Amino acid sequence: MSDKPILLTGASGGLGRMLARELAALGHRLRLTDIAPFPDALPEHCVFERADLEDGVTIARLAEGVSHILHFGGVSTNQPFEDILGPNLRGLHHIYEAARREGARVAFASSNHSIGFHARPEVGGEKLDADCQFRPDSYYGLSKAYGELMGRLYWDKHGVENINYRIGSCFPEPIDRRMLSTWLSQADLLRLVAATIAAPRLGHSVIWACSDNPQSYWENDHRGRIGWMPLDSAEAFRAKLGGIISADPATERNQGGAYCGERYSRATPPPLDAFDLD
Ligand code: 15L
Image 1 (cartoon, rainbow, N blue to C red):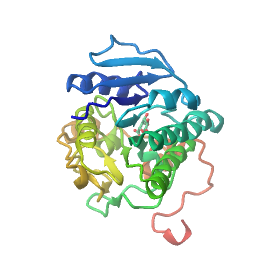
Image 2 (tube, rainbow, N blue to C red):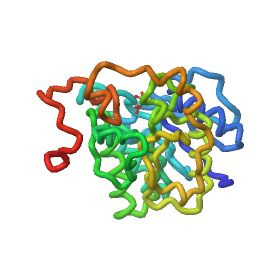
Image 3 (cartoon, helix red, strand yellow):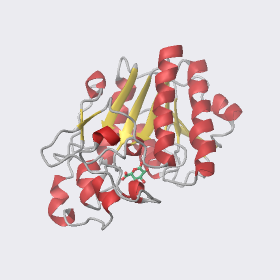
């Protein structure tokens, strides 16, 4: 284990709190940061400092001497463009500049919403590969596509190693039919982050961050590079959740679910086989 500390942004959020607690328990030395106060007792080996991702000077200082930046900070749901712009676009640039200066690696909490307008596959149908086209379903999803492309740029131009977790739905339990496909258990996320930290090489990697759900929408990513395999599955929830769907066609047709239906204003949803018009 490297003796350098690890910077975790978004430490006060749902995923950040879990990662802070569990990575500290694994013996990692963590610098935690968030714009909101840290709501829990500080785990062992951790320090916390409040910071705004838009404050590049503070982000640069917090990143001094770290081996990894686990970037879980920023706006984590769809919001108006002006609210996304600062934390998710300018803030992400500060993260990558800090990583370049420190020779640190970046693990970026991207999202399925960067590709959310891909249609859901039929049961048993062809799944989506990680090198598919970006099809963001919201300003939030667009900011995640930008984040992944920032990783592409910094690897190609500066050799900053990075891994982009296209997170499905990381909650304690799935809550509807869509999440039978997209759910990522918190334990599988922790194993993913631990595998990232231990991996000898990352290059520029993209991972479909969902559990081993038989009806997932996704396949073919870079998990082989870091030796990660999800161990949990949403399938046990099928009887309880299989009937929980919305009445909105744009939501139910597309992988990003409700983010696709939100403020949708195309008069007629395109037919599923209309790829020449996509
Ligand atoms: C996300 O990226 C969001 O952070 C989360 O709130 C959920 O909407 C999740 O995706 C999802 O798609 O279920």
